[in-house]
Each structure stands twice: as structure tokens, then as C-alpha cells.
Length: 406
Image (cartoon, rainbow, N blue to C red; front, top):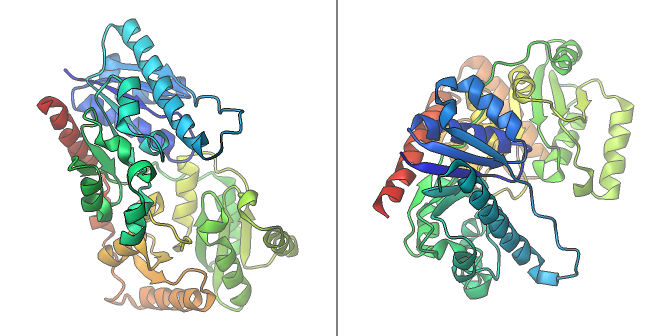
């Protein structure tokens, strides 16, 4: 029986969902699991509830982000933060191994990005971290930006240099479009595509925000921008669309925490003025969405999901949510999300920051859906299958096979 350690020092957004499903999947693959996270009790209770028969092989320990350096370290600050994370992980695993009398055969970092940095090489990490490891690399965005940028990301400027370690047995990614490039950059390392899994908990029918939306929408078609409301999510574009389409039978929902630091002062003034004017075709809920059931309730109340993120290179869990609840989406016509929407016909792709383009796409989608046009027949089932827990099981099997070969 293999012993696998899972590590994630973050506990917000997708992080709890991913670590829970990773742990459950590995237990179902007959592994002993050591999990390290900031909220061990929550994770332990979820495992006991979800797979009680396997809980005796599950051990959970607390780990937190290392304290940031207070010294002005300039461009090496992020490098030293990454080194501190490797040191913290090694110390936590040693303590846990002594406690349960088992050392891990493999350590899997659920958010590998934090352990990579410019100026950090595998030679340094190999001295610090004496375990075989793998991890999920969420945002290797430089591999989406063409050969010019990749050419300068070499030597000390190569953010992926740590992946050349002989102890790195495999790298997992969410973006299937960059696997060949990453394999080449990591000297032929095994690169495995992971599904962008989503919690499909039943929608909370008692979530008060959904009732407010339904009451205010009065039967109008609902377009939703959900989750963390940062400027990069296309917030200002959708807000302008709402202002210019008050005569349409459309209702716009902006739900999630407003990330004010991402907006210019004049942007915030505009947002505050619009919110204060209480437009009839909008609902603003600038608060944290408490859980997956509540988030799913918001997805379910929408007719179309807006996800035209600005210069967003990566995979997004909102597409999986859209496929689970069978909601068409609007996305940017570039990069990973654009490619997936095109492949599975999940909705429309438009130019970023383009208000007329967005309005035209909404007209097209609503008209085509009303007529049941053959041009808009999303393959939600295919997308769900590609990003399912069954796919996650297969991906972890590939990683465990790499452990067996060492």
C-alpha cells in the first residue's frame, strides 16, 4: 500500500474542494493518505462523511503558509518564499511521519505554483526536500504566450527549473493545450492532464440571494458573473452591457466579493454610482458566497454565465459548473477557455472588453436557444465526462504508476 502526502497551504476558493476530492480519490485507489492543510478538522470531517469505510487510512495535519520575510529582498523575495515553503513542507512531513510511523512514497502539491520561482533550481530543492514529489501546476501561463517569451525564460529566469529534479516524478496540469511544451521544458518529464473538477452539490434552494434575484428578475433572462469579482473577470464590460441594454428582457447578476484593489479609483467611483442608482435590470451582491451549494444555486438561477475574463490564459472551474448545470457561457476567444468552448460548443467566444460584441453574442445565444437552433447544441455531457472524478481517478493512477517505476 502506497502512502501519499497531499499538501496545500491555502484554504479559499477552489482549494478545499480540490484537496477533498484528491484525498478521497487516493483513498479509493487503496492508498494511505497524509494530508496537510490549514483546516484539518474540516477536511477530516468531510472524509468521514464522504467515505467512512476508508477513513482509518486517512491522517490529517495542520500546515500554514510560512511567515513572509520582512526584509526588503527585492526581486529575490518570491524565490525565498518558495524556498521557505519547501522547508516548511519537509519539516511538516518529517513530524507527521514520526507520528504515524510511515513516510510518504510520494508528496503531491495540490497547488504546485507556490513552490516554483525564478532563480530557483532543482539543485537547491533537492537539498531541502528528500521525498519523491509531484503536483498540480495550475498556471504555467508563459507557455501560452508564444516562443518569444519562452526563449527568455531560460537559466535563472526559467520558472519551471525545479521540475527537472530527479525526485519530480510527474507534473499535472489543467490546460491540455500546453502539455507538449511543458514536457519539453522539463526535460521529458511525464505531464498528466487533470480534470478541472467541480463540486456538484445540490443547489441550496433556501439561499436568500437566489430568491431576491428571482423576485427582481420577474421572468427576465438572467446573465451572471459569479465568484471573486475582480477587474480581470470582465466586470466593467458586463456592467456597461447592462447599462446599454435596459430595454432588453435581460437581468444581470454580479455576485461575490468585490476585489476593490484590482480597480482604479475612477472604476470604483463608477461602480459605486451605478450600485447606488439601483438599476432595475441588475442585482449586486458584493459578499462572500458561503459555500458550494449556495454558489451552485446562483449558477442554477442563471440562463447564461459571463466568463469573458481579461487576458486569462488558464483553465477555469466555471466551465465545469456550467456543464454540470447546463448553462451556456460567454468567454474570451483566446487561450484555454476559448479553445474548450469552441471544442464542446458551450456558448460564444467574443473579444475581451468589447461591449457591442457582448451584446450581439447575448442576442445570438438567446435567439438560438429559443429556436432550439442546431448551431447552439452544447455538449455539456462530453465536457462533464472530460472533467469528472472518473478522469481524476485515471490521472492519479498514472502518477501512482510513476511511483511504482522508481
